[in-house]
Length: 215
Image (cartoon, rainbow, N blue to C red; front, side, top):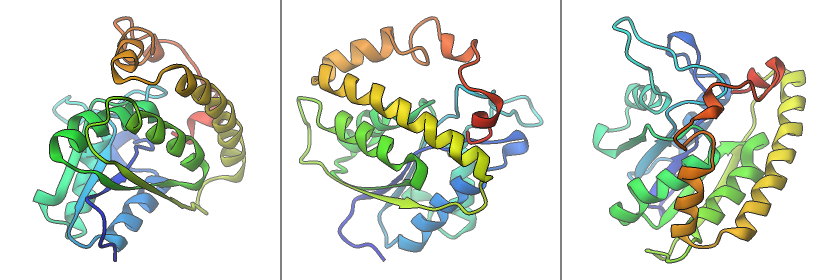
């Protein structure tokens, strides 16, 4: 059980047709449930730009964080302790919306972020970058934990690890250049192709089919 923590935070990992969560996402959720001791559990993600969102029988989008919330509810986590976010489509967005939607207004300074081992280095880089952007609203304390996923196909995992290394290099360059929240906001909503007005990330193939299986 975890005591000294305001919220357990889970970045998104993908959602499939019918609202099925991949095994690596369920592993993150299961670890959060295992550690939970009365704090918030915050699941971050609308979905991913690498595959369309599934829709329900009424034609409405099935957001990953809403599906994850149902998983938490079924595990016995009280509704009032579950926080969702349906704006982000990547790890940088997870970190940004975590801070501005939940952490800052909610006074949630002590966070444990749980993600998959293959995703952990980039998650640490993104969250530490975003939560250290000035001005800092709270005395943030971030901790990170990775979980394995023995169910992921080894070929898919290997290709995803390669992509993670490439993405981490680009992310480190950004974090060195952008150090203020205002500048981040400008970059995020005018240059990032998942969040600017053109939303090109949703219209262009950016990963091969094997890597897409890890989202």
